Length: 486
Ligand code: NAD
View (cartoon, rainbow, N blue to C red):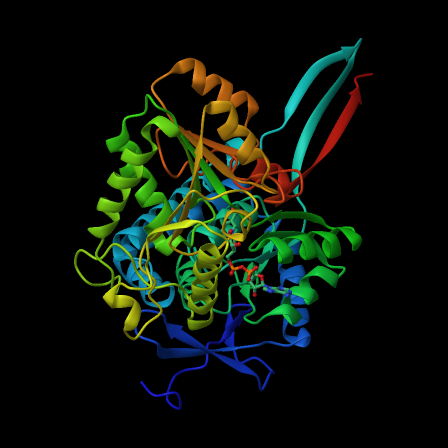
């Protein structure tokens, strides 16, 4: 396909596929080849205002639909997602770059969120106390809140939207989504399948674009709540502007995830897990392992084993057999990553494996090979900043406490893992580490749909986390009825 023949992605408003009013578009690339696969409209504030009005109208009737009936549509949707699993996974690989197996896993994570949301009839139940005093009783009833705005990142084009809209609509809200402009295609497939599942027009809408659409959602009086997932500066901005406009906001932000490897760890397992966590999805995961603190006694062995395994990684197009490491999302992101590798060298870290020299890094597509720095310290930019690429920093520590103190210096606190066989160390780690999601002897401690998902500190702004019962609470509000029987 050439630039002139690629299609312009449409918005989805009120059940119709609509061209944006904008003249402005951006190219959407296949990051493995550099080919332009579509163009995304940078929609206007009129586009998003229109979608919000439509969603607000739809809310009036959707909130009245009995909860089991809403859940039934999601049951049908779950079936359709399962039927289209392979196609969805391929689309993720084409627009995002992660390998097919990871994309397949991402679809599974999305489906699990839909499955959890089908439980809305039980989840939405209230609570009663039949005797708060003589002849007096009280009960809690739960209701939807209105139009929800969802703003999502490029790195999980299926899973992250599915953290939001299935629970939001199952609980009776309507939804306006602004997908990442770098991965807009999967979102439209999700909408087509929702329509096929029988979702009424206007309940789910998509407006593609960038900050104008985001600001439109943040400022509009008829938007009740905002779910955001993306980088730290944008999360902070969204949280401040949304709450300033008196909305409920949950803003999941960037990360720098720390692992601690103790002397008694199974190094074979630790290196396999950390390799996957650091270089899987090209390091473009909010739960990617980005810093490892290793106890000095096993550090040399750990680094040698990890490097040996990193040398065996196959780099290339994620649709090709056996490929583990795909490209990063854009050429600009590759450039930024190379600058970080350069800065790590300048700051005196020991570059053990240089992903710039891999054959794939010299070819078309935005490839960077697995890169490992040893002897990293917390003064270095590669330790402090989220690089969001296959670059891993190793620091050496003398004990668990030093590892925890080092991790807790970070402004980010999303995930953290410990590798050990000692229960007491696990307990001390759990009690003292700053992070919202912890793992023991695993590399990516991402909670499943029925548990809350979120970090602490600058990795999250808000109160109720995504998913689990927190998700249900975020998308609902309560009434308490007190009755006197006379
Ligand atoms: P991003 O912040 O660039 O974009 C996220 C969304 O915000 C997109 O829809 C984008 O269009 C919009 N946006 C970007 N700049 C904006 C601006 N100036 N004003 C208004 N809106 C703007 O993030 P990304 O690069 O797409 O995604 C990667 C980031 O997301 C990483 O930092 C990663 O850690 C984070 N992330 C966090 C979690 C989590 O659970 N904490 C999960 C996934 C991704």
